[in-house]
Amino acid sequence: MEGSLVSDGQQNENQRLRDEIAALKKQLDQSQRMTALGELVSTTTHEFNNVLMTIINYAKMGMRHDDKQTRDKAFDKINNAGMRAAKITNAVLGMARNRSEHFELTDVGKLIDESMVLLEREMQKYRISVDIDIAQDIPEISAIGNQIQQVLMNLLINARQAMSEGGQLVIKLKKNLQNNTVDLSVRDYGPGISQEKLRKIFDPFYSTKAGPDETGKGGTGVGLSTCKNIIEAHGGKIRVESSLGKGTCFTLMFPMEKPKAAVQITRGIAGTVSQINATTGT
Image (cartoon, rainbow, N blue to C red; front, top):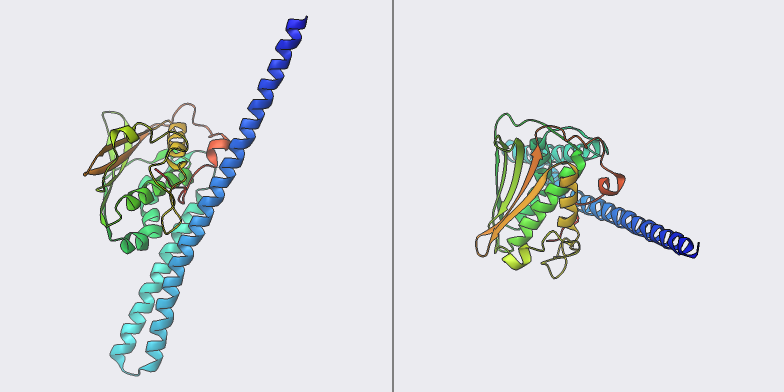
């Protein structure tokens, strides 16, 4: 009887600890969601400010000059800025439409395009040239689109941060018929990661960064471990290859067919990550 009481007490204590862990995970998920939202707002606000300043400045120039050539130039710049603003708006709306927690057929190529619209100026600022190679006839995958975009933006920002002096970023999307997967790779040509650090890169809270950069991104150590959880919850895999002095390549491999267990990702995983971005941090 006494043994039974002790056993019941242990079970109650174990349950209490499990409940506490679940509550802490929920708080972490909420924190990551707020970080991602804050970074998205910061990025889009900066982009819109640049667009508005362009429109205002060329509108003033057009009003100051009567000659047709100057006014045509001003109208052309204003038109281009307006089109840029529309692209940013559509990208943000695309992310908003992808906020479902249920699996849906998702066009990964479109996620790449929308992510690059949001990060285009940041890449230009840090002198990063981007090469996008999307193969033809890529099938849609079963996914929670917003989560895949968060993972993608996390990897893109990590790649940008790895090339502090500028460089080349290569994004490839292709079918892997041998593995029956859709493979998305993000390759940078930065300094690379040592094999010792590479073994720990997906560990929770492990980071190769000393802290956030001047944009406030990076250094939390939660990004890649969460990315791994999200991709695996989609029935996929994430792989990393890196060589010192040559750069790093992350590859996301998604099954072409909907995974049997992929009816809905649990709320704990569904809320995680960044970035937009993506809480970053390798």
